[in-house]
Image 1 (cartoon, helix red, strand yellow):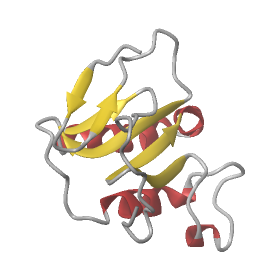
Image 2 (cartoon, one colour):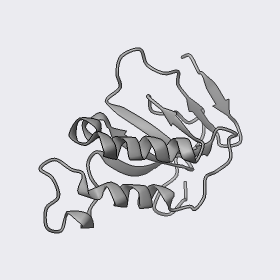
Image 3 (tube, rainbow, N blue to C red):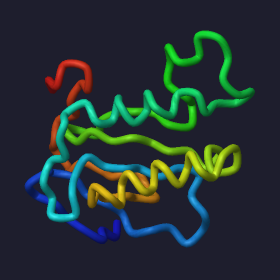
Length: 130
């Protein structure tokens, strides 16, 4: 399997960019230098701001859950936000906000799901434990 970058400090592999337009982008909680991005709840904060952008538009109480187009998660110990391309189709300014957040904070963005090295235990994003 081809690998474009290896970040041993973060123990995560980023696949090369795909040739077809992706349905999802992964904003990783790693700077281009491989350092962990802070604050530690950045992914939940970004997804919270984007919660109003959802199919059918904002509804009463929709701020209480994340949008299906902007989902915070973790891959191993690395926090990330999955941005779905439907967000761009729904509101290009919301999409640009997410992309500019990544750019302004020098965060890595991947068009494919980053993979953990073989033998690395997955961690529960809620507890941080493997």
